[in-house]
Length: 486
Image 1 (cartoon, rainbow, N blue to C red):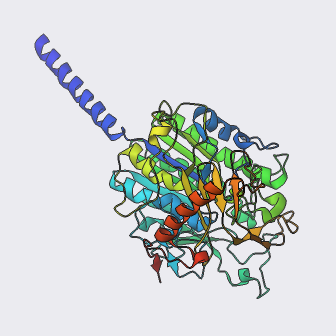
Image 2 (cartoon, rainbow, N blue to C red):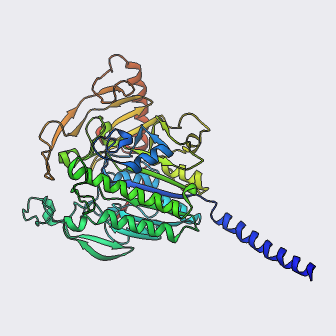
Image 3 (cartoon, helix red, strand yellow):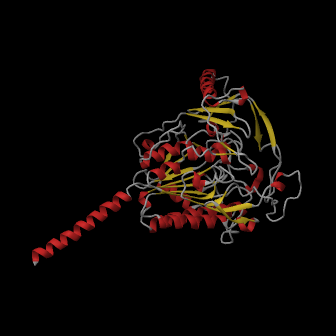
């Protein structure tokens, strides 16, 4: 009897060990969460110098992870930047420069492999909650690009027929907003509602956060990829009643505080479900602040200009990454990195395959885990153009060579106030060389002092033009791929 009892105990103990081993195998791959803000400037949170707004959860990620000071979006505008992040490519390589408005007849080509595509193949559950902006109609919504779930809006929440007061319809036929359709709210492939006014928009941060929390809880036993793409702090600003009037910086500060709350909800859920240590959490922004909205826009942290420019204020954005016990807590890194580098880095973290087609991103995992002291990137091409493909600048190490071009500027006319848009302006930009290590504000042209650096970067520019083209020099790139068109 005793021997039989012992055998039974051993039998059940073996079963428990096997189940435990299976669970360990199932959960051994780290979860990936990317929170991508819209138009959040480099200086919009306390880890990057903001004053007057409490951001305890941004602070927590910075204290427990790594904060980058030289992280750049692939291009300084919504659609292009999101294409760069998800595909690991310069957006002009894949035909996704600029921004998609409702009448656009192109979208991200479904043949391009995204982070979601690669992770889904590797056994991950995948979801996108928030703003998409890589295709405005079916079949070009997230579930056709590797995401199991999508709940959100197809493009920015200012792409609607509503005026700056948040309620009135735009009736002036000269204002392109008058021709915009109602802003749809989409669940997977079905339009379930519309965002009718600023009051509806004020619910979006909470709504998308709740969806994200539910996804984490539902998939805590499986590896998952969560892509949370908040539409804010892009103008028009919208905040729920629970944060209205809470900051010392008016409506903009209230919005940042609510986004900080959202991050806190994600952190709390990871802790409560016991999966924080096995989750890589990334927080960044798609481009710099839209400064034309003045006090309803954010801060570029002292860098020159903002969104829709190739000055540092347009592409230099916050980047925080936390992976407990893998990334040393409280570290700051000045290596040049871009959002194109996320795909190959995440592939290395998860063991997922890389895309079959050429990408431009580089693997930063050795830097993140302390195996190397510097990152693999020393060059970045600043392309821009809505309807054009202009190589406007190149960064090489701490040098930045700016080529002659026409640029948006926010410094020549009045900015907006209280939600009203200011007046736009353009300027002609001459050839100039900046030493970003001594002049991060790009104020002092030093090309006459360093002609050899100008020559060196001009050679890099020729390589870029051969590969990706340059409308400023009438060059067609040899390695461009087509977007989806319809």
